[in-house]
Amino acid sequence: MTRQTLLELLESVAAGGDSPAAALDKISWLPIEAVASNMQDSAAFARLDHHRALRQGYPEVVFAPGKSLDQLSEICARLEARNNSFLVTRADPSARERLARDFPRAQINELGRTAFLEPAERVAVPVHGPILIATAGTGDIPVAEEAAVTARAFGNPVEQIYDVGVAGIHRLVQESNALRRAAVLIVVAGMEGALASVVGGLVAAPVIAVPTSVGYGASFGGLAALLSMLNSCAAGVTVVNIDNGFGAAAAATRINQLRAQPS
Image 1 (cartoon, rainbow, N blue to C red):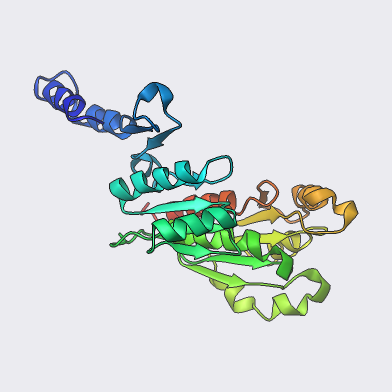
Image 2: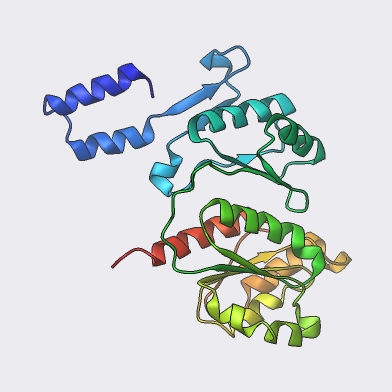
């Protein structure tokens, strides 16, 4: 949003052309920043939505694949300048190295392939309780870490229990207190994806299942776990796409923070 655009909108409110509520709605949609190598909109490689947090409760997140290292760094620099924060997902080793160099404050998660620049001052967000992230096996942890970093970046308390799959179900039973505390659960599993159904049958809180591409040949890159979770016999289990830890955390955030709003 430019100063002139804002001035025109405020003048319209003063003249009675727009109500304050209508003006607020317009402001929430207007501030898109074009990012281009030559600083011309026609050649923009990205258009940053700086007011997404105003509409959705959390800011725009950067998906690293497909972007050059220079593009990625420039996008993050613009986000830092406006928001003093950014979150990057699916960053490969070269991208993580570049971001660590350009933004020394950024928290790099090697397993989760994320880079998170935490704002200097965090505004407390009302939440219903902790988001619990559980994995069936150690091989599912990278997807779980993506979910954990995202959930924390969006203002949620996060708890984690890893390697509690159905091959040794007693490991999950030992974590019954954590299961009861959780406001929302994210269950991450590859192979046959059975853990989501088990957890869904034990808890009253919402369960978001994340199939992973971990498994032998007949798992078909996570398709077997996806279909198993979609066909869960436990009522109320919802499913996101294969390896989509970010999407699970975004959905869990909306549930957790909506449940915390006063009725």
